[in-house]
Image (cartoon, rainbow, N blue to C red; front, top):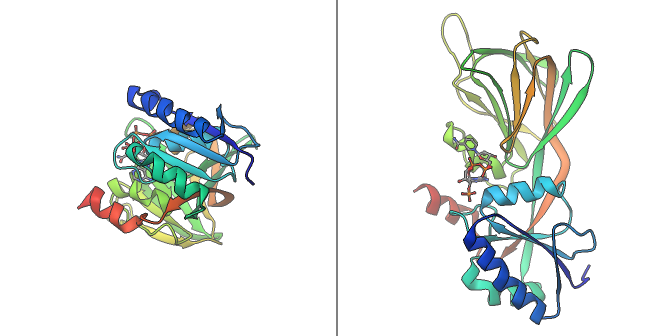
Length: 267
Ligand code: NAP
């Protein structure tokens, strides 16, 4: 809904502060009211920074439904769409609704501790479940409640399609087109010996299946890290990972092409 209100989020860099100033001037001269931070009445959220700033904004706003556009002052920017030099075109295209919405799903991990407490962790990129201090970690993995393997290694990473180009790619996972609604389970340094047998490649799960992870020793320290946010557990009994019902609505203009970004970043 057009309310004339725009919420702005900016990371700490000097460049982003300069870009914010310029954008603010342009938006207010077009009659918009610009607020710092999230306002539920806003018709548009704008995040100035890199992909990391975008992730932090989405967590801060609890994955809002309001359309969001990213202004890139970071590196390549998979979430970030607009370069500061293209502000005028961006505002024109926004006002004429020359854009599409890219809906990006999230991954959810529900952690249950030995005393029965549950915590939910959401990731737009991924959830990583790892041990501490280079200890090998052993997990019993199940898919849709069917036991699959006893995993041994550094840990497991469960990435969304949008997150497939981040940590997932660095550890040998596959790049997935964000139009595919799936979860990618990528092992972190899996052991595959006569003593320990683990999948060494990623596996892809459809949207209706849940991955169950039960640590062999619940008293060992385990980290559940969602989009770089580290959560420490000393008594984790189980974590269930699935696609969550939270998603974000990213504005994409006509020159957006996921595979061109992939080529520019990786080739
Ligand atoms: P950071 O360690 O400061 O930066 C992580 C890097 O990943 C940045 O260059 C960031 O791009 C890029 N990135 C984030 N999301 C991406 C995506 N969907 N596709 C491609 N590149 C992406 O951490 P941060 O800025 O707080 O971001 C948290 C993310 O870092 C996590 O979700 C995880 O995916 C990633 N991470 C990667 C590794 C690794 O590759 N070995 C290790 C730990 C964490 P910008 O420069 O544009 O911000």
